[in-house]
Picture 1 (cartoon, rainbow, N blue to C red):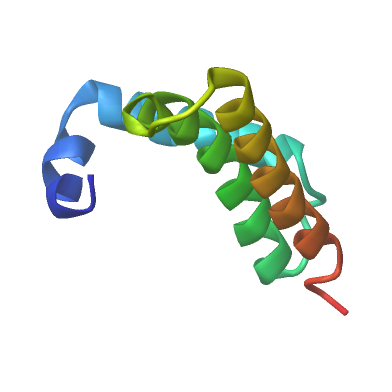
Picture 2 (cartoon, rainbow, N blue to C red):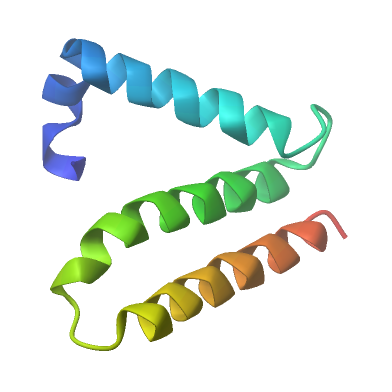
Length: 85
């Protein structure tokens, strides 16, 4: 995705994905939240979404992979809580 950002933005699915991620992220933090907190919250959201897709290629028990993904996202959210301090 990084290498094809321009192409993704030009496609309607790219705009739709961007709009949905922005809307979901905005629901998860206050508008005046510190920038670092906003970035981490968005990061956790995307980690769960893309991790669910990309972990199929990783060896291991599906439930253990799901648990690891959620733990990672929660750690990111916890760091967001202290990002403005």
